[in-house]
Length: 421
View 1: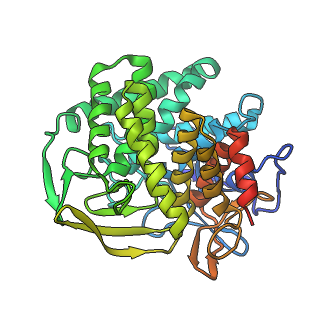
View 2 (view 1 turned 45 degrees about the horizontal axis):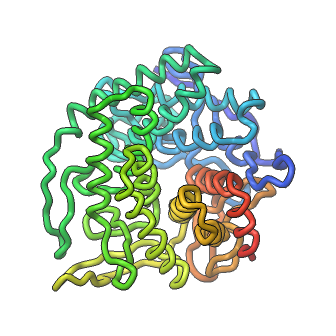
């Protein structure tokens, strides 16, 4: 059951300069991209998880694998959203091969395994790879449903395979997740939902929403449309504080904890508000942007914090400022950008650009975290004076996704250029 993999090149020496004045440079992502052939002779591709400075040597995650559905799914989104996708056959073929990888990683129960190992084996037992209701299955859903409309006109055979895969996962969701009772519990004085993935994981719920909206739009699946609302209700319940009270309309990530990374809850509520034609979700997203993101900009980026509640007041229990990573900043940019998209108010373009300038030196260290010259996204800001200059898949992908979003809106791009160092 051997699987073969090969690199297209042996180093990151070939730099493709972005077209025009674009900040989006796919060079490093293309370097991480790695063709593979599965035992059934399917030609596909993964994206190397780690790339270590100074030579950006490709590194496997020890005990897990060298590539994973979680990263490959996000790489698909980067290529799909490229301004050159419609005309660049190299980008198209990379997208198709990454999609084939995701399809190969689906298990019989509909969920996805996450990691592929260099020995050719799918990691079917690791806690970060098992075929269960976790991040990587939601990432796969989002990539597959966003790709489907494009494939319908460009690659019908792959489109049909993608639809089969999505339908298989949706069937499992209907069995495993949709009918979980809408109960609540109390954690450190805070009422939290228990019907989301992992009980109260609003961050995971956000990705499911983003994956299901394209599916429901084309399928008119009433059951899954109702599930989008159910997830959005759970996310909304986790919003704490207001414009005057900590944590200032923050949407907690899980139980009584907020993590910057993967915190796409507000963005998902904006999208759910449009899809469900329900402005109450939009209002929650606006409150998050107006209050919490304003507080973030005024008080410095946070990595995570834990809260408790007593007497109707939420208090800070503990907090971490570092490390700050692209995966934490990207969701903030997307939330503010969506607020601008939906309202047209210039203050949100300014906020989105200000947040995005973190990548270009407007951070506590005053250092660039993304390099447009070669497409490298550094792995993290470790302290006020140091950065982790490794550049793995996640940081590279999240940086590129941010730059693509910024360049969608000239006003946001102008704001980022105003704030960058």
